[in-house]
Amino acid sequence: MLNLTFVNQYISHLPGDSLAENYPRQVEHAAYSFATPKSVAAPKLIAFNDDVANELDFSFSEHDEDELAQLLTGNQLTTSMQPYAMCYGGHQFGGWAGQLGDGRAINLGDIQTKNFGHKTIQLKGAGPTPYSRTADGLAVLRSSIREFLCSEAMYHLGVPTTRALSLCLTGDNVRRDMFYDGNAKYELGAVVCRVSSSFTRFGSFQLPSARSDGALLQAQAQYCIKTDFPHLLDQTQTFSPEVYANWFNEVCQRTCKLVVHWMRIGFVHGVLNTDNMSILGETIDFGPYGWVDDFDPDWTPNTTDAQGKRYRFGAQAQVCRWNLCQLANAIYPLINDAKPLQQCIDEFSDNYQQQWAEMMAEKLGFNEYVEASDQAIFSQLEELLASIETDMTLFYRKLATINISEKALEQPALHFADCYYQSEQITPEYKAELATWLNAYCERLLTQQGFDNSKRIAKMNAVNPKYVLRNYLSQQAIDKAEQGDYSELHTLQALLKRPYDEQPEFERYAQKRPDWARNKAGCSMLSCSS
Image (cartoon, rainbow, N blue to C red; front, side, top):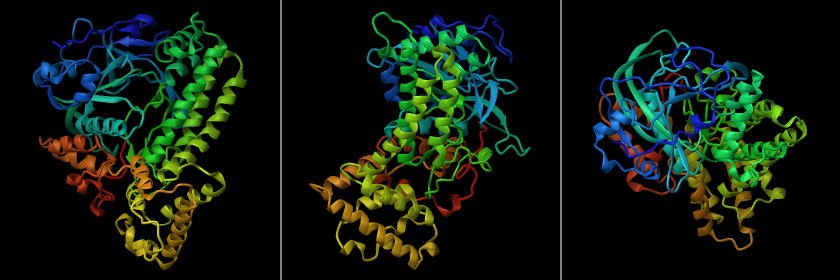
């Protein structure tokens, strides 16, 4: 049996649902409801993360695959587990949706690790909860593969994120309408086990506030601060308005850093509803996400967002600020003063612009950000990248290999040939604009004090990944896995552990999106179906 002792501090410190029955309903005055994972027919472990297991203080070698599959699908529970689903609300696509909650996720409980603090272990796709509404609480293999791979890709890219411990098949089939077009079919069911210090969301505070449940709002906030932000409290453990304001300020700062990371690597979350915003500033809920292939600030990977483009690549900071405003409104009763909250919101915009500029300076290999010269270089570069279909990931890696000399600028478009999706777009006008920008870029570097080209290359390659989880790569792994071949899943799991390294044995995974994948299902835009 799995040698983990669950301390279950979340359910010990917060009020729970008074009803034990598991059926869809409105749950009042409670942070959670107990929910037992649904028994599955034939659990099978198909991917496991030893690194996360080690953080949780257990190893794969101590257990056989069958035992782990039973445990990590919820078929077997240890004596210390008390599974529950969390209650929260949220804004979805800008509109208040009311109660939402964990409709497809069940927390097995939380544990205290030796070196990594407390961790909550959660199963996604483990069955219905009181928050499932009309859904079945299950998940299919394709979306589960995407979640398992993406959370680990983000971690190794240096982006705050929830982690993935395992991926299991359930042996059951799940009916899904992938494109919401009336053509539902049965797909392989799966469960992802994911791990975080906290799965608390902005919506965890929005719902009690919207219901004028001050007691629950206060309990949620105090538990969150005491557990995940203990440095904000003094020895008296007093929850003053200043503590709440400082807490909100740190949430704003963490969220700001998160979005800057997303922009650095070209990641688009796809569905930044307030219930998908982690209070810890982690990437959470990997649904219709994507990495931009050709640089396009207006691109969204979410078919539901295709018209409004609310969650497009270039708007992620703006929408996160909007989400923070909703959180500020929710916690206002704890402070009863709008000024400190508004100050945090105002500072978010300024901080984002500063941090984004510093991030861009790093991507370009500058020693530091110099506003007088660099803002023009940044804006002109993004205009250049967007002017024709240019692969963002490849461009920055190719840029690092430029020899900062006049000879390297004679035919710059040839140097970046592998980055372009439409060769006919490379007009004489584009070539001239590229050469002009490169000259300005090189001049900026050559006037930099103590310029060293080798250090520039190392600096750039440390923040500009060579390998990202392009949608077509995920889809290839999904296609094989649905036929019982998990080799591509395991290959991606391995190569994504070192996204900044050359890894010549995996060179084919660094190529731009192939033409056949431009409009193929799962390779470009995706729905929220899982």
